Image (cartoon, rainbow, N blue to C red):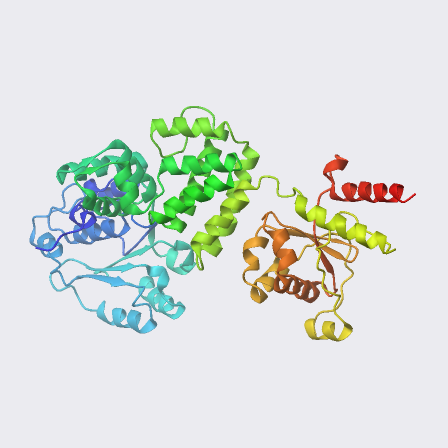
Length: 525
């Protein structure tokens, strides 16, 4: 006999067996006990929370010949046929693959026929939000004037995609994410039935990864079974490709210490252990979210899914962080999520960790400063007069400004030159979109950046520490930025990194250059 997945083997057969959705199951049981049956139900909520399970139970209950306190009895002929999948009056339709208007028209033709052997013909339409607009219109006609022997049960994870006309004709039930303690209890029960030893830490980690979904939790437990009869945190981490809480603590310690080397070494270890980088990003985001909660929510009861020992570790680590740094890190992790959907995920995570460890992104590059001072000395020796714009340190290898002919080629005919005032560039996001089209690698170093205009300069404030070197060495990226700025601003600019003015003259690059120039001038007298 083929192996049966745990989520199917332990799927509830009555409303009383469903856990975590009592606000729904109790209402349905009361309705069925009183004989009050609606023609259309809508079950909505995140995946794995019991929508399809309750739909199947409801389909059996409305046809049960001997309802027991709102539950199908499981003993009558109608219940036995339904459980065996032999009741032709109960139809399950996957709207993801049957979403056309022809499918709904075929359904409309069928509903006119009376049930073959049951009280009602029940249609369960899963993922109903996948129906096309024309299919929704055809379904609406059926919902407006349904035959007395028809019951529709619609299920969806994206209720916002359903037309209001459909919503208004259904009795709606919202399924909540199941509480982690409820999931852990159910996992312990299933493990006991299967002869497994599931530790508290293992159950907690599975419940945390399941994110409120019972089906996902049982599926994760199923994966862990291959690791042996004893399932602890390490088994769960290895089986599911997770970093594990200890690794998350180590990585965040390295970030707090601005230790790029340790952070990248830890990442390399996780990559070698086949940890999925996208899952790691989600875990790291959840970890810093927990630090944020620990930092802001007072009292013992905090909305965090973890063991008491891990909460203690989180509390200790949160004391090392400022809330401002936690929010900065969460913002960076959120920014890189879209780029993780495609491309080299390992590289994206490495770049993210470098950004997280670069706490002071405005810190000047000393070698860069020395090169520029040397260039100034050489220029002064040759008799050149140098004028530095405010708050700017131009890139060393500036390309010449484009000619009038080049401008005509680069600017769209619909773009006219704007009166560009000094200050932050409002359309920088639009400029970046064009830059990414011309030079995709620029996405990594320009994520989270801002830009400012100072006279004829476009000054870029990028948090990525690799930006300055990329700006100086990558001609394609420089030209892409120039072309994009010209397209959206209607004016040609020279490029440079933005540097905030500081009260300490020794740390201000312009002040250092000015002092150096003064020394040169005094030495020449």
